[in-house]
Image 1 (spheres, helix red, strand yellow):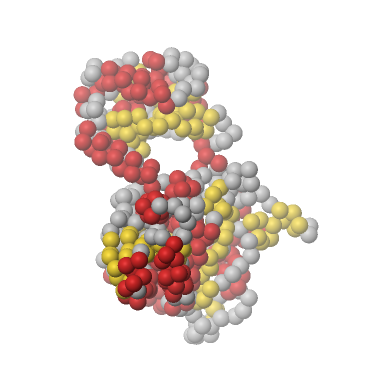
Image 2 (cartoon, rainbow, N blue to C red; image 1 turned 90 degrees about the vertical axis):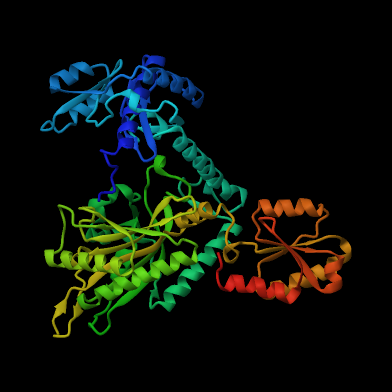
Length: 581
């Protein structure tokens, strides 16, 4: 099944239809507005406008009320096919519609939809009439800027977003989820918990990790390296730049140049910041000769790459211009492919479970119309990918024709605590780069053969994964990932010596612990550290000193009173060792 929106789905039709209603309402309220496009999207719809005078979110309620008045008419949505000449005449005062018409494939029909007092250039589909839309089941949610056709050289338009559901209950449920998502926004929590920052004056899309965030990142990366070493991977380190011939050979300068930073001229040569790690790993492979006995190679790198994302597409850690890919390449023979793919899937499932993600979904992308590589390799690799998914009982959908031109792939999605899907791990065959870089190995019969190359990412990028982790846990990281794991709160100065002894005992065992002997009231300290989402607070009073115990308060306000010190240490260490979620 395709990952595209299902155009025959009733919600798709309703959302498409109400986008037209919104455009009519906007035109009624702001008569000189030029209209652009208004498609349905996941969870809702939007429409792009060029306003004579910029509006604000204060106008959304007024637009909503006008939309409800239009819906009450019950008007039908009627399709009509017209000629190009008629289209130009009908939309002569709408520059964005004219631009669309000029770029239409004229072998296809030009259709319009009429509803109430509005006509739009549109292929549909729509609901039969406005009575099919519950006027209590939609809401306009936000305003944003959007360049026409996504090109920053074009006019900046105003995009109004909305959401629509089958009924008011579904809408309310969705809006409640949105509120929870806002609370968990990694940009908001990143600031509140002092995890990271972005400095536009230095460079948009570049992430600065603060001490708290850097500690979490280091823990993630240390665990990543440890597990890769256990699973037979060798760790690589490669440069950040390479000469232009490398990117010409790989094809990036032909197919990916718009997403690469501008060239750097040095030593009478052109260099580019790397957007991918693959060519560097191939350079290491090609630095020597290899036999079938040497294979497979499993090479992994936490390699920082740079991609020139459009400024409007940047989104905190989720979409950055500089980020670190947890990249790996498996170079193997035809006979090793199945076992290697199965091992990657097993490894991915294990890694995600350790970070608290239990649910995985997969998409298997098949051969597109334009591709490289022979048919037998495509058939074999697709069969291997599908067999591995079936073997591990991972639910998957077929993304027909969705493979890259150089090979089929599996895209793995994780499901977070808010039931959102995130595209993360990729397992990608590549029939292109081994050919372009003339990769070979000596086969059993002594002849040179082309190895199979599999690209593999588990976390995707460290930055994006970090952002997802923040939102998944709402900033309340599991104990093993928390930058500060324990805070000691003495009740008074009398117990300070004992508190220092507890601090040293836990610190010497590697616990990330803080002693707060400030003059603030105990309850104020507890509230402060609960807001900072510290997992455990050790409360020490005179009773605890007398009995060599501590009392524990958690960030969720649970209490364990007067536990023996050694038992508390054992309790904390075991949770960290087991990476308990």
